[in-house]
Every structure is written in structure tokens, then in C-alpha cells.
Image (cartoon, rainbow, N blue to C red; front, top):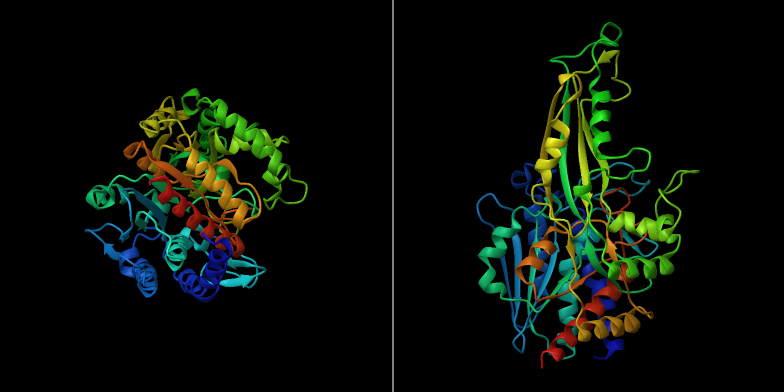
Amino acid sequence: MDHQKTAAFVNRLWDDQILPTMKEYIAIPNQSPLYDPEWRENGHTARAVELARAWVERQKLAGVRIEVHQEGDRTPVIFLEIDGTGDSTVLMYGHLDKQPPMTGWEPGLGPWTPVVRDGKLYGRGGADDGYAIFASVGAILALQRQSIEHSRIVVLIECCEESGSPDLPFYIEALSDRIGTPKLVICLDSGCGNYDQLWITTSLRGSIVGNLTVQVLTEGVHSGDAGGIVPSSFRIMRLLLDRLEDASTGRIIPEWLSAEVPEARMAEVRTTAAILGNEVFDKFPFVEGMQPAATEPGELLLNRTWRPSLSITGQAGLPDLVQGGNVLRPATSLKLSLRLPPTLDATGIDQKLTELFQRDVPYGARVTFEPEKGGSGWQAPPMAAWLDRSIDSASRAFFGREPASFGEGGSIPFMGMLGERYPKAQFVITGVLGPRSNAHGPNEFLHIRTGKNLTASIAHVLADERKSDS
């Protein structure tokens, strides 16, 4: 591979074709089905799929077959099959669905308003993970323009990842004969510790998301009349959450929600902490005077990647400050987002949580826990020597620096599924979600230079994969 030619081609492709199409994509409010139950009627998902499909067709990839599969009430998937040489198969993955818009966008920015500013493309879903299909195809094009051989490649793009990928197992099974048995899986839905080197994700946390409700009355009553007689639903909620989390430290209390950290990952944490230092927490928009949960970067990395943690991400039953009158409310509901260690089997965790909250309820209040989505995490298998060398040379060629690796705090349900289905496969899990890129929140952006460098790096790995098979 001529690295200069590859970089020049990828840069032109991004500037002339990928970025303009990405702007169109960002303008489509194609929220995941969990956040847009009327996604089919609204038609936004269909628009996003058609935009991506039409773009791929215009690229004239050699040996490509592109199909859109949609069965019944399930979300669609885009399935690309690109002929190659040799006997191996590479599976590439991404998704097109998006998180909700969220509030707090800076002036001039918005979830469905694509803006390029200071080398970043702002808008919902660009970095997470709409760019993946364009970068995947761009990497293959870079090889074909130099007549470099590659293996048979399958690209699978789903539309319900942000809802926990409920439709994906069906399509994986339905297309199993077409997919084959991948030697290498490449996923571009992850993050990077900085924008200066190629980052490889070695683990992903699992998750359980569900709604916890405490009801004490059939209707609201005067707080002056009932206060001191009727225990508030919010106070009972606090007591129940204390069973799960130590509020003073954030430590998750039940032992069945923790797992031992492998020594290899402990060593990786120490290396990553030395690379990033205070960048581990400096990237977050703390208010003045706010401190992170710990001061040592290694401890924070462990908290983020291998220890369980709880976030409250939604509520019902609480009026806003203007409408909040002197009423003791009948019920409080909170959406719990519980992150799980990568190696913890999530099977049955939702039932254990239900039992944790519903046993011996204070004052006999009515308590329900309704699991919404979730699944087990994932840990990468040992990396083959050829892949280790390839990632190192790709990072040095296109980023100008050695690669790095770390665990991610988020979840990609597809990875755990593939790890079980293809236990002999190698994995390259990477992405463009770096400092302040803020996936799922306001001001999400895609770091354009990183997107270009990552595309070229994936082309390099694809070329090396074919050579390793010969």
C-alpha cells in the first residue's frame, strides 16, 4: 500500500462526498425505536437508509451487492456483500439510528442542524455512528483504487442499536449463510482516548436499563395535610436506591453485580492512565469547583470500564418547577441505567434487581421494576500477531504515533453476540468518539481529521488481513 496515495484518496473522498452526505444524514431525526415508537409512520429511518444505500451505489464498488432487508415490524438493515480473493471473510458493522435530541446545545448548534466548526462536524448521530457505513466503504474503495487485494467483505448496518439491538439477532440468523464465518470483525461504533493515535477497544460494559416506580397514593393530596402522615414516594425511592448504590461513594453494593478484573486489563489500565493522565476527566464539562469521583486516573479508568455504575437518566411523576404546587405526589418513577462489568453474564440480572427492589418495601408501598433493554458486555480475545503488527503500522502511518488500547464504558450489544457466535474471530473495535465529542448528549461532534485517519487505517488493516490469509 502506498500510504500517501491512500491518505490523499481518503481525504478527497471525505471532503467531496462523505461530509456532504453526512450533513444530509444529520438533518434526519431518525431516532431509535425506543425513543420514537412511531418510527415507521414518521419515515425518518427509511430516509436515512435510502440516503446511505444510494450513496454506496454511486461509489461503484467492484463486486458489490447491496440489499435492504426489512421483515415485519422490525427495523431495516443494510447488507453489503463485496467479492474478494482468498477464503476468508471480514465482517464490518455500524448503525444508523440515533439517540434523542437532548437539551443544552450551544447557540447555532442543534441535533438536526449539521455544522462544521473548527474541524468538527456537529449534530446528532454523526460520530455515533452514522459515519460507519461511509468510512467502511471508503476504506474498501481506497484499496480498490490501488488494485490491492482484499478478502470477501460483508458490511452490516442496523437501525436499532440505540434500543439495544432487539432486531439484530433475527437478521444475523436469517443472513447467517450469507455472512459466513468471519475471520475478522471490524466495528466503528466505539471511542478513542484522544485524537492523536489509533485506539482499539478491548472491552465493553454490559447494561441493564429499566424503570423503577414507587406508588403511595391513588391521587395527589395537599402536602400540608398529608406531610408527616403519608411517606413520600421520593423518600421511599431513596431507600430503595440505597440497596443498590452507596450514595456517598457511588459503589454498587450487591456483589453479584461485580466481576474480577483480569491482570492483562489491569496492566492496560496502567498504560492508558500514563498516556492520558488528567485527560481521563478533563474532557468532561464540569461546573466550576466540581471534582471527579477519584483523583487517580487509573482508578477512574477502572470505574469507567470494569466496575458497575448507576446513572439516573429519566423520570416521571415530577412536575417542573413552575407547575410543582403544594402536592404530595402519588408516585415517582426513575429510569435506571446500570452499567455492568464486561465479563459479567447479564442473564437474570433484571430479575435479581426486581427482587432487590420489591422485597420488604418500606411502608408497604407499591413498587415495580420494568426492565427495558440490556445485555452482557464483551472482552476481546487475544490479538493475533499479524493484527497487532497491522494496527501498529496503520497508526504510525496515518496518525504519526503508536496505537493505544482501552476498555469502553459503553455497550455495543452486537459485540457480545458476535463473540459467542464466532469465538475464533479477531476483532478491531474502534471509533471517533473522543474527548468532548459527547455522544448521546448536546453538542455531539465528529472529529473530521480522526474520521479520515481512521478510514485510512482500516484500509491498511484490510490489506494486511488479506496478506495474512495467503
